[in-house]
Structures are given as C-alpha cells and as structure tokens.
Length: 631
Picture: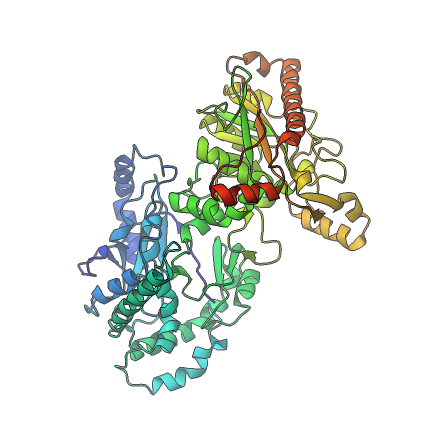
C-alpha cells in the first residue's frame, strides 16, 4: 500500500555543503536537523525578506496556467536516476530539483520529500514543476553506499519481511533488473510503456508507440542497476525493519495534519494498512486509489498537487485560510475535470444557459453576466446539487472562476470510511468552494470575486416529495447588506430540470419514521457545525441525509441568469432594514419568476429528451451544440 505522509512546514534554512548531484539538482544541504535549526537562527529573516521582495509583484497562480503536469514520464525518471552520481562519499543531503524552479506564490510553504528504497530522491519528478510553483520543494538524497542508521509501518506483515533472510544470501553486487523484482521498486514496465500512447492514434500507430516506449524503458531500466543493487536494498529493508517498531509506538502522538494516500493494487504492503493508520493518527485525511499501484507518485495520470488542493491541505500559515490560500485550477486540472471526469455527466445533462441583457432581452450564452466582480450569483438549488458541476464549468468557460459558498459537510471528516480518489466533494473544493459563513463572504467580496450562494441550502437540495422548484429561503436578508457594503452586483438565476431526471420516493420525513435510518441521520449530523442557529423553523439547520431517488429517462437542464441588480451606491441598505428586506424579497421573486419562465419555455424545446439529442449529435458531431427553444 503506497502511503504518502506530508507535512506543510514553515520555510527554514539549512547548512549548504559542497557536493554534486548531477544536472537535476540545483543546490544541496546536509541532512542535519540540528544544523538546520542553528543556521535558521543565525540567518534570521533575511532570506525570507529577500524572497518576499523578489516576489512582491506575484500574487499567485494564474487561472488555467500550465503546470507542466503530463510533460514528464517514467522515462525521464530513469534518465535522471542514471545521471545521478553513484556515490560521492558525502552524507545524506537535501536538494532542490532544477525543474521545480522558483515558487510563483508569496510565502510558499516547505515540502519535504523522503525517497523510497533507491534513495535517489527523484520519485517526485513527475510533479516537480507543478509542486515547485506553490511549494519550496526539498528532496532527500541518500548515496548508494551510505550506511547511516536512524532511531511506521506494517513491515512485519509484508512479503519482504519473510524473504529478507534469503536476500542476505544474494551477491552484494547483484543488480535488481529482473522485471518481476523491479516492479516492486519502480512499478510495472508494461504500464509505464503505455503511458505515452495517445487516445487519437490508430491501432498501428499505437502499437509502434508502445514498442518504442517499451524498448527505451528496457534500456534505461538496465542503467539503474548500479543504484538498485542487492546490498543496497537489503540495507534499506533492515533500516525499515528496525524503524517499524519505533514508528508504530509513536503514531498515536502525532498531532500534525496528515494526508494518507493508499493504493489498491499493491505489491508490498498488506491490505488494511490504510484503515489502521486512519484510526491511529489523530488528524488524518485519507484517499483510496483502488486501481493504482504502490508507485503511486510515478503514475502518469496521478497529480499530487490536485489531491492536496482537493482535500484543503494547502496553507501558507499556521492555519489554513479558505479564501486566501486558494490555488486556482491549472490547465491540466481543468481538462481532467471537465474533459474526462464530468464529461459524460455534463453531456447527459446537455445544459442550456441563457442570460438577460441590460435591455431585458434574453439570449443564449452568458453575455448578460457581468465580466468583473464582485458578483454574487443567487439561485435555486437543484435536487442533490445536480446542477453544480455544470454551472461551475459554464461560468468558468465564458467568464471566470466562481467561488461557491458550500455546506460544511464538504469540508469535514472522512465519514468513517476511506474516501474514493477525487469525489465531487474534492472537485468542488479544488475549484474554490469555501464554508458558507459571513467571514468568508466578506473576504471574497473584498477580493472582487465571483461568488455563488444558495440561500435555500440543504433544504432545497434535499427537498421532500412534491416540493420541486420551491424556494426555501430564510426570512432574514442574510446577504443584502454585505453586498451593498462592497457594491456587489447581484445576479439572480433559475435552474430547472431535476424532475426530468429523478423522482424522490423516500424523503426525509419517511426516513425519520424508520428507526435505523433516523439513528443514522442523527449520528451523521452530530459532528457537523450548525449554520443557522437563529433561524426558526424548517429553514433553519437542516439535517444532511440521502433521499432515495427513482431515475427517469434523462431530460435536460436549463439555466437562466436574470438582469443584474447593481447595489453600488445603495448605502441606504446598510441602515434601512426595510429597504434591505425589500431587495431580498425582490431577489427571491426574481429567482421564482426565472424558474417559472424556464418551466414554461422548455415545453417548446424539441431536444428536451435525450433521444433527439443523441440523433442530432450523431449527425453533426458529439461536440456540436444542440439547439433549444427560442428565448
């Protein structure tokens, strides 16, 4: 089981030494923590000050920037390993990979990487550029002949523990280049050879590409024999054995944030190790990648930075700020999310997006949506939030990223089980969602962001039977005064289509009458923070639950953005509660009118059902925009 534990620490200095690690290392440091601390005290804040000045004009990542992910493969790793010096007689040391470059964000945190069995420290090479944009990356290099001792794992239960006595009998200069042995250390050669094959190639071209890749991989693999030697492996495994008991006895005392990445297709660790660590570590988040091998960091389509962003563990201070520590999606992440992960789902919804110009004319597209923030989108929440990914993609493509104010359930806990790879929860966080509260709304408006708010929240998204398209907004004008304070443009929007996809058959009221489900709902909601303590009635704090749904033959999803409401200059809203409440009710009425318009006009859409849409795209191409009704 591949386990990656990383802690985001404050940058510190370390004592440089004179050594050479080849063209992939920019500079090196001794692996002495005592010297590192002493050097930091001596240097004070001078280094940090210089970095801040150098990056004074750089506020962070640009939206859809090129993070370089996918441009480096296992072939590059093997080449890097081959060019590394076998042994220069020096001690273990930290180095910064050349590919990492200089971080583009201010006060970038430190990321320390500990190598695997080979000790080279280049296993992050597929992620050097992407991580180097937002971290100060330091990798540990252990020379081949170094025999420095130290002093968690389930090492005693692995196959390696059983065969360790046999490995001692092997010649010390024996290279581990047999494919069956090599896959335990660098992964599957066949799988690595297929990583460079593109989907749009013909069968003949794909076969030739595979053969070329496999031959080059074999050549480079043989070149690693001087580093992955039997005596080196035996020494590292003995170190692992001696350290296992030490680590296991102290895991319960770890208080730092821990991200646990577990693979399903394992060659080394026993199953259940991730469960054990998740229960033992006090502040741990886990992601389980079922179809991955133990060399998780070297899989061609696994993006470590994306995972870190999705679990909300990137921070630049002692405590994470959900607003200011947000890293916008990169180009590779956007392509992966909407070009692969949600592509079929959004094609199934076949969304129609309409907007209202200042003249009141309704047009297809988002021409009526403002181009500059701060903007607050306020609308109706579809059943199970089914519209969310489509809405985020549409605004992202035509305007700019929108920061969703979301329920705390998206940010709290593992819910007693290992979370699957990148879920909708992680994707929402990766695209800028923050917990819904006044503080975050204030910060987002202050930064002129596009903000998405559902006043009906969970009550609308998990509504009861027969309640489709009913707005369950609180009586108090929760967002109006803050919007007026920053001159925010409010854009009401309606969305319809949920009743063409699902029907609620067992709702909240039904589940509360079933003892086992009632107990599960109570238990699940116990640890979730309350959002609306002052709101009385069903529009207050709503229990999160899972309604039972009956799928229908898919219909279509429709959005209509209303005429923007400009609050700039409405200072009277800050002191006049009646006018603030009137604007709040007007916004709600606009949302209801937009919903009514869409429900009426969709009856005129000849492509409302999935069948005519499939036929249309079969004729005109899968990427063709399917027509709809005339606004």
